[in-house]
Length: 421
Ligand SMILES: C[N+](C)(C)CCCC[C@H](N)C(=O)O
Ligand SMILES: O=C(O)CCC(=O)C(=O)O
Ligand SMILES: [Fe+2]
Image 1 (tube, rainbow, N blue to C red):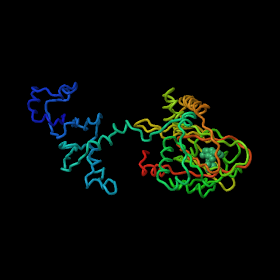
Image 2: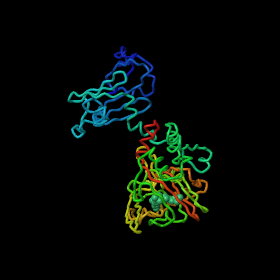
Image 3: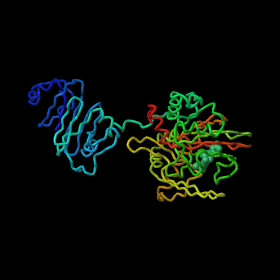
């Protein structure tokens, strides 16, 4: 049955049902189709509230705040926020979802002001505020992004004149930290200036926003071109753009770089916004974007140097998107560490290489490259799920220190400062 809340019309309900009254609602084009014969009307005090709902056999349909929403009844029972179903102190569900009849239907549905009341067959009452439902519905989420971002090429980034944050203000003020994180979330890179060029101070910075993610490279790492590890990073060679630790099931979320010393030439750092490049692929060849986001691949790290013995394998597509809103959240791109492709059927392999080429062409466009020379005192944070890094070959002695951060903890800090993350 359809129910419509029109406060000033309730007294004329009978007339209305007999078709004798015209009112503003009837002038709306689809109004008539909303009226099967058996109708339940409910009073509302608010005239401005424009809410229509219908109780279907297997779901509840709600139109409110310009959104058409459909709710499953098990879902509506499961998300009950009553004291016996949900602990509002711990924000945890107490209800045992497995005890809910999968064919449950409400006995009655009633709207009072802005609250919907569902009475279930056992008499239990669940209440939902209309705004809560809009905010938490699939249809509401679908229109939103989880993480607002500004995609960039070199020109966009340079024109934005994103300010760096000073070491002192980063460590000691909430504003400094918040500005830094806001820029980091928007652009996927951010700098802190005037940092004493030591590993200890770099560690302090990292700890201000996150837990440090310890990996096979250690907690804080410190590296030169001594080939102490079985990886090209530990040489003087150029490194093409890539994301790190693609061979982890969960690649490291953030990378921190601090160049402590360089006596020589070259060694500039290359940064490329992987999401900007992926967006170009989506515009130019959506089917290739889709392939890159659907085809899972392995990346692999095999090391047998000195005491270091490691074999890591990570599986996942190059582009990772949220299925409900198609938002990109992670790019895994490392041509050095990509393993043998044996997870892709013969007839898809060639199309995958074509799509990978399209993405690579975008990633390699000079206008998408942002080059920067890291210097002692200037610490760079990179979103390793979004921005690719690389480096120019170099001569001389070069010392880099840094660490990886756990993504969850960086986002946690950002949310606690009121940022959307
Ligand atoms: C940063 N640090 C020198 C510790 C690690 C280098 C890891 C390099 C690896 N090929 C990758 O891309 O994951
Ligand atoms: O040496 C550099 O600038 C970066 C090397 C690199 O890609 C890494 O350590 O992850
Ligand atoms: Fe790297």
